Structures are given as C-alpha cells and as structure tokens.
Image (cartoon, each protein chain N blue to C red):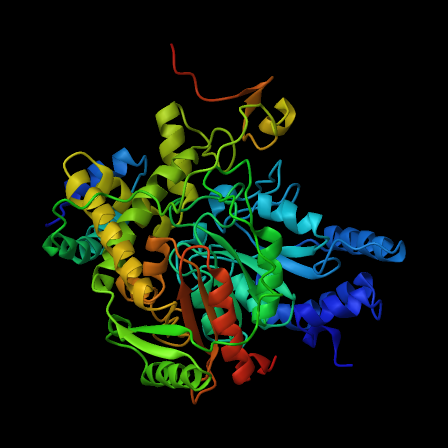
Length: 95
Length: 487
C-alpha cells in the first residue's frame, strides 16, 4: 500500500508526536520502505492459524494477592519534572 | 600471574575465593583498565566508582569473616542502561530519560547485588534498545574494541564492548531481536539470550514485552553460565517469569556433544551473507560432527517472513510501552506549554530520537483502525507459524546451528541512512525471539581482516543447558575466545 503525508500526519497525531516538515518527508519515505517489506506477509496463508501474543511455555505463575514493594510518596514523586504538594503537576485541564 | 583484567570471570572468582586477591584489588585493576581503554572504547554511559568501591569493600569484609555470596562475590560487572539501578541514573540511552534516577532496582540488579557482584557502571545501547549498532543513542558512540572505527553491534553494544575490552568480567544486556547475541558475535565474546520467561523482566525498561529477555555476556561459556544461574528463576514481580527449577549451568557443562543432533536450517544461508562467515559455520558443523554429534539438514520454512513479523510486533508493542513517556511522572518535560495535549506532544517529540519515533509510528500505524487485522494480527499469526517451524525442527534435532550475524562489524555510520539494511543484520537472530527460545553466540573464526564472527546455537524452551554445552564443546575445541583486542 502507498502511504500519504496525510496518513503519516494522522499516525503522528495518534502517537502524540509532532513532526517537522523535513521529518514528515523522511518518515513517508522510510515508513513506506518498511510497509513495502511487511506487505510480503499478506502472501502467507494463515487461514485458521491462531495469533500468538507471547511465547508462553507452560502455565503462567501467580503470587499471593498481597500488597508489597510499593514506593513512598516521596520516592514516587522524586523524578517528577513538576509537582505540587503530593501530586504530579500538569497544565490546567478544566477552565 | 597475568594482569588481573586478563582473567576470565571464573578465574577471577577462583582467585577471590582462594584469597589470592581482594575484591578491592580487582576493582583497582579494573578502574585502571577503564582509565587506559575506556576513552577509546566508550562502552559506558556512567561509571559508578563509589558504588563499586562500597560493594568491593563489603565483599572483602565477608571474605575476611570466612563468608561468601558465591562465584560472583567481589567480581566487577556492568549493566546495560535499560536495567534499573536504584539511586544510579538510568536512561535507556534516551534524552527523554536524561536525569532519571530509579527509586528501585530491576530484579536482575537485585540478584546481582545479592550475589555480591560489584556493579561498575551502566553501558551504552541503542536508544530504548532499538537498533543493531549502538549508534542511535544520542549521548555518544561505542567503538568495537577489535576495530575502533567499527560498530560493536547492538543494541547491547556497550555491554559487549566492555567485556571484550576487559573492562569488566561479565555484563548483562537485553535481547529483543538479537541485541545480546549479535554484539557478542561482533566483539568476540559469548552472549546468551535465555528462554522468554527464564529471567525476570521486572525493572527492565520495556521495548517489546513479548520479545524482551535479559541475559549475560562473558568471555567464556562458563562465565555466562555462572551469571545465568544468579539472574534466572521465578520472580513474583513478573508473572511471565517461569518457576521451572534453575540448574547449576556451569556444573552441567560436560563439553560432550556425543550423540547430539545438530540441525542446520537451509534458510539460514541468507543472501548477502559474508562468504567467510558462511564457510566458518559449515566448518563448525564439521568440527562438532567430529566430536560425535550428528548433523541434520532441515527447513524452517517461515524464516523469510520473520523479519517483517518482528518489525510489526516489536514496533506495535513499543508504541504501547513508550506511551508512558509523557512528561508527567518522570523524564523530559517540554517547557512553555499551555495545554496537557501540548505537554504530551512536545515532551515526546523533543525527547525521542528518530529511530524510536520511526518505530512508534510504524507500531501505531499497525495497531490503528483499518490496519490492525492486516498487519498486527497477521504478524502474530505468522509468529505462530515460526514457532511451529521450531517445534517440528526440535522433533528431529536437539539444537539449531547457524551464524549469529550474517556479516562482521561494519564501519560506524555506514548503514545509518538505510534502516532496512540495518534491520537485515538481525535476520538470523530474530526467529529465536519470536519463538521465545534460548540462544547463545560464541566466538567463531575471525575474518582475514581480524574482525570477530559468532556461531549461534538455539535450543528448546528452557534448555539453556544443552545450548551452553554445545557452545562449551565448540569453545574447548577452538581457541577463538582467547583472542584479545589490541587496545
């Protein structure tokens, strides 16, 4: 399939990325090359083949449902670029 | 006795156990070695000499009291910078995590510390482990110790180079599509990617969760086996980590391959493969046959589709995993923004490098409405076919043998402008990740120009022991691992 600049802009928007004009051009070209390569998959017959989400070998392991290994508020906030009291700060969303 | 830094991990471990040398003396030797070669190799993003010094002192105190935490006690090692280290900056090689100081250790970090290992620092990588050359990190390049104008491979290029340059005795990396095995091959060291689920991923900065697995680098198979024993095993913090028992891998290295069936997949002779590499793999198969193994030619028919499936699956998972970098809780935050949306967009656009953006874009595209079935689901179905290929192969053989990388190390900058050419470098390592299998790369014959190459051994799920044993038999029969870079 052929990618357009509009499609690349749409995907960038979904990914919350902003591309410069130069980046847009490069991304159309480079993503097109990858999309061309992955289009080859459509030729493989996968009728009735279940999709595999993870290479799980055997049953998953579980643990007791007990809280543990939690961070303190200070630890959780230590890397926050901006904080107010015990909260992460973001621009106002409700006027 | 040779210089301390020339010893293997097993040798320095023995010297420490016999108290011929102290952990502090070993650390002094490695710090001096770093001073001598690190400016040219640049394997590290960060060296934590103070932390290492404290760990070495504690190790010496234990030894003085007649105690030991095992073979890694007092041994300097390094960690790839996508493994969390409490109190020590961890960036995953990305500007978006510049200055990030984790509040906790990855489980593998904890286990190394509990084993008394001396963590000397954090090693360079491609940004978020996305790459095959350690060139996509925005901070600095890492040089191949065997040819300083060439790449060390990637994405765990820093860990591979640090071990190859004799800066540390062991190191951990992560392998999503070959990121441990391929740099090991390009730098003449041993690198093991364990079975998916063998080692906890808790505290590993996620790239593609269904493919990522942490594993060790060492100069010898024994060195890798000793580290695997420490990091493997169930972790309550990772429900995908297996509770299968962890054997004593080093003790299980018999060096015998008698009666073992070695599979040679015809699809692993790929176009563009270096003729020396191809000839060396064939010679290696003959050598193992001479040691009593049986060779089985076989087919893994969906190999050709693995690369495409991998890039869709890995990119899709990455686009989801990297959604957490939004400038709110940690990492880079754009300045002067007025809305929350602008905060997300600007922080991410400023923080991520181009290769990371490209993969987020591809993944977002493959998961978006209208394309999900044609790309994401299709790739996951092909993944099932690739897994079935291996299941069939392991009906007629015990391990699969191939080259690790189709080519030796290339010059820095040579392939940067062509992502597809770079992706092709992973073609022999990717199927193993898709199927979740264990695989090791062990040094093979260097090229006429002296560039290292690697032999890859893949095995059944949780059969690291057989994989390591074949590599060990090969290593004992040849002497490539003894070669050292001239630095």
